[in-house]
View 1 (cartoon, helix red, strand yellow):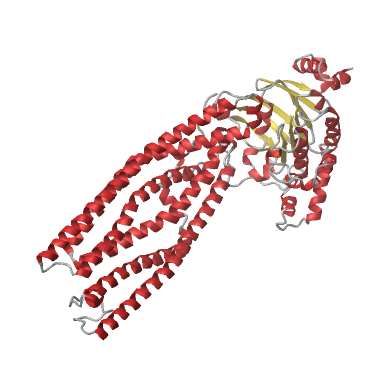
View 2 (view 1 turned 135 degrees about the horizontal axis):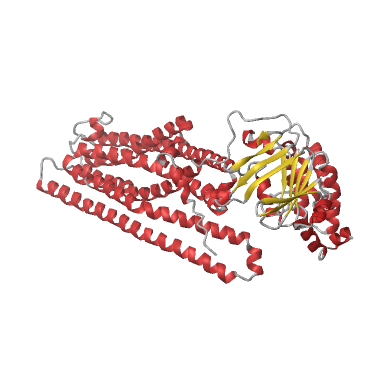
Length: 638
């Protein structure tokens, strides 16, 4: 089997502009909260610079009693001149303690405010982005879902969007930290000693340049890693969903090998990137270590030599206190660069997906009828998936409202594909599909699809209760089931659910379930049999009260007795509706108003059951072959 990529490489082609700018645009509605968070974050960083200055002043003015005024004296918050006498020294110390306490109070208050404001903003952006991405995904056309794996979609909706939230939450604050800390420390150090400040600040542009080079190097590698993760997620999702098949054919070793191969690829790519990251961070630490030693040597030499521009003891201590704080955020630049690249890679996938346009759209002045009669016409329709060879060729079919059309033919004849064109899951390549004389491409999609119900051979049930799955057919009933407020009361909604279940011959088996209509059906309805799932799907479709119903082998997984019961109900229910019934078991459609036989995407026969038997063509052959194996068909033939 070929390996599905599932990495959504193609969505990057739909990216418009820089992805990080697109991400920041999501924070724009919260600019007041964001501005307050940035301001308080700067206040936090500046408040952290005050205690070392207090220590330097205490060493020089209180302990050593030097005449150096210091920065606090120059800004007017501490007395200038020489401090002599115990009382004066104690008074200055008390004043310095008050300044330090105020700095810590400001730091604590602003730290709480900044973290709350910035983190809550990141959470709001994450919420909005996930909601918009999910909503956009739901509005994409069916051809997108045919060509993209569920695992890749889940990777974008979860992993990628969570990574963007973490980037906004953590790295935005780190950016403020770098700007405020480096800027504030640079000013203070320059005030005390321009020469040593130049030595201390020399690595800043070097680290910035190195980080830029690191970004250029790591970018393609993290793109590859993200694609590998998506492929791995897709493989795991496929295997978990296909557990029954894996067990049936005993392919545990085969699938373990495929998962192990993709895990090994992810491991190798991650380790390769990790090796460079560690080397990069180690080089940053070495650079800052060299600067620490230089400041120690140069500053110490100046003090020993009695240089007039030499630092005081307090200022010398201040330099080393600040050096640690200066290079801590600068070393963090490397990690931020790494996380920026990860976030950029995720943002490309998220906003690339948001840039994908549906291929099936509705016109601005779409047709929105109050009701649909159910006249259907296929006019010289040709269609092929993704521009490939046509699956449907020049099909024309007139179906008056209230008519039941049975579709028969070999597997792959194009029966299901033809009916997927009716609700515009796909658009025709040529020709047209009309409902009530109006081309379906002129309808509003919601108005069109609300009038068409489809019951498939393998119906999808949501993980929830029996009642919730049936209620999905009608919005008002579904809201009532979830207590979300509607003009349908919970009791009325449940009554309609029961009526639909009875019509689909599902009521009896539902009553035998542990909690009846409140029984959970499991993921994809795994707790129910195939026939039970189909009957719930029929009930769901009937609750919608559509004008047009499509049954795509909807009774294929039920026994003969149950099929007869369902058929009796369906005969009553479709009496005033246009119905299309695809059937492998021809006994299901023998009473249809007209039976259409398809082969290789074309209509080859059309007529009533008796007409087609008399014709002696494909339909007659299929009927007789089923008569040999199906007792019900044999009885009907007799």
